[in-house]
Length: 169
Image (cartoon, rainbow, N blue to C red; front, side):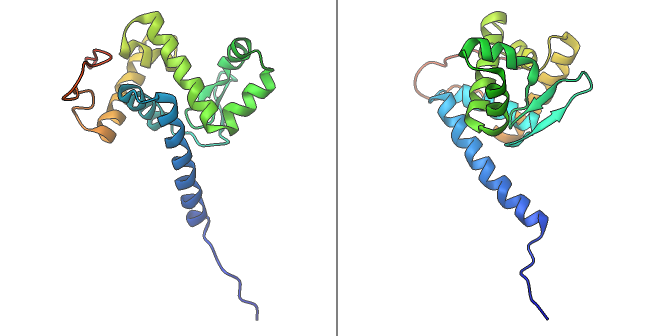
């Protein structure tokens, strides 16, 4: 009789997810570059999206959500144009490189913030150009932010000015 060590899929998945979450956490910290409000924003998006390294989730419109922050494949041509890299590389990096995925999500969010000049609108724009979808998404991200950081998630620190003024939707 042979004895083989048995490792449940759940145990392997949990271990992999813990390692992936550590990688994503490092990428978020780097991408936020010390801006606490931006780190919290990226965590809110990440918790809402719930993707993973290697994720490619099909949508009903034929697009795919890629990687940990589920960056929609609609962005691939635009990111390719901005970076000067081939679309196939961008798509691969969005799926497989957590830090590239987080940086792309950061760029999408900050582009939305620059365009709308409204924090919560930019959260919604990250998800969809459709207003009712933006509102639903924003409300859900807020729930995730409060769950992770508490009700005073954007309270001013005791020292220094706040980089952004944020009121809840």
